[in-house]
Length: 318
Image (cartoon, rainbow, N blue to C red; front, side):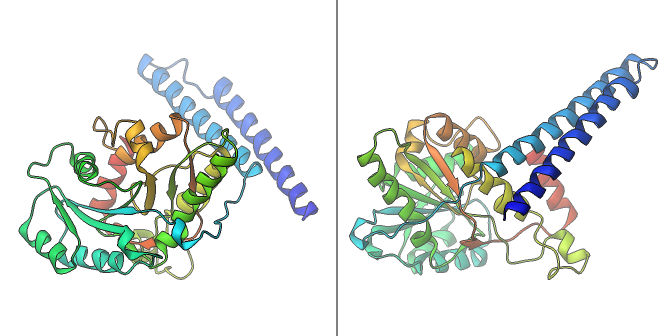
């Protein structure tokens, strides 16, 4: 173990040195000073983007050296609080929603009467209302699609009361143990805060994004069994490393959030197209901590064609 740690430090040091040498070379020997103003401006911008990229790598290494594991404590059954499970939908097919709803109503919990499941539908569809009635769960419709997903979830929050809120996208099928693997972190945090007032309140617990279909690269390279899903690096590596700073990133689904944390930052933000990322950042900025777990607790659909991938990545880029 000691030899492994030493090897890692040597690799990190070499990476830092080689990157520094490269950036110095880029700055002093490759910028097109003799070319047009257009070329100079974009040359500097490209160099700046490379500096930022290397700075991100330094942060990852720093986080890796400070990495800490999070452990779920055993919690008495009577200590489990009420949870509102919000399944957000816009125009997804009812057959897709059915899988998610069916899995949600079959999640395990010590007292199932404390689990309140709602379909949050921002297009107010009768067939979705019929699906909710079929499973004897709540339906919260929104007549006008104002503020997209944020408006949908804010509307659902106004009609619910539980101290914890679990959010799922329409295609994300929760595992049966989802609540048993996430809620105990909040119960334990409350106990710790009663013993020590300096302990930060827990804002949210993010589980990894997981997918039951092959992504674009796995499918076209015939490598579903040999390479991981392309999003695993973020969900099961980068975001877990963020635990070192108590600042995991909220990715919009498969998450349990403190209602008070959402209320303290004014609800889901409506001035952005990445409401999940911004909400998580605001919760962390408000003094809450957040954690990301390692094991997937839900699975959904990942884009499998180029137009869908481009639409998704353009949104992320913006």
